[in-house]
Image 1 (cartoon, rainbow, N blue to C red):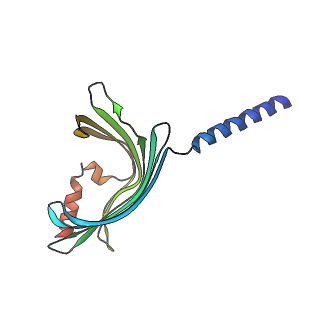
Image 2: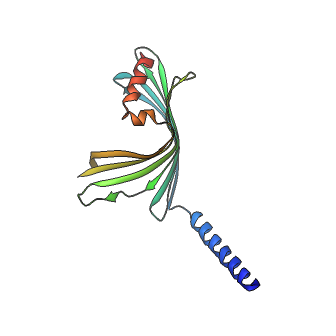
Image 3: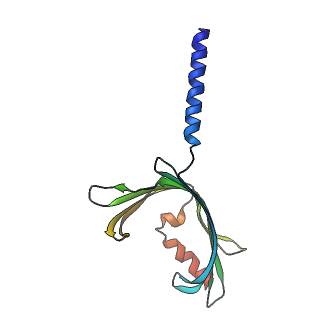
Amino acid sequence: MRRFALVLAAALALTMAASSAAFAAAPLVNEHNQFTDTFPDELCDIPGTTTVSAVDNFKLYADGTFLDTSRFQVVFTAADSGKSIMIFSAGQATGLDEPIQNPDGTVTFNDTYKGLPEKLSIPGGPTLSLDAGMVTVTTTLRPLGDDEFEFVSQTFSGEHGPHPDLESGFELFCQILVPALT
């Protein structure tokens, strides 16, 4: 019985070592990007200026999966009113680096987002809308050639947390921002 316990303990130790080595595998690609940019823009048919600040960490693994952790802050200032709104996003996305090839010639991407995909607010003021939690987005596209694609469909599943803008088909975005900017 004692020998069985030692064999079992050794097998468990080997299993733990093997699984921890798999999780600790170095990524094939490990990119870190940080940038800030300001440019003329239009948001919900309102002309203005956008300033984007972002930090992005992208890792691609040998099994074809990726982990993308990012933080984006966008401040849009309307040209006419001088009013500003802030769009903030922070969290991680995971999925397959290559799309799924469908028999009809389309391609499908399945990506899972965790964190804060979208917070709309007045800079230094109240939150106007908040999408937070987890969601899996399945997007199907038809390749047109030369890295161009036609949108076919998009579905959402596994939603946890509030996602009012996502659930509105992104119509809520302009409904909230236009009054805040005018």
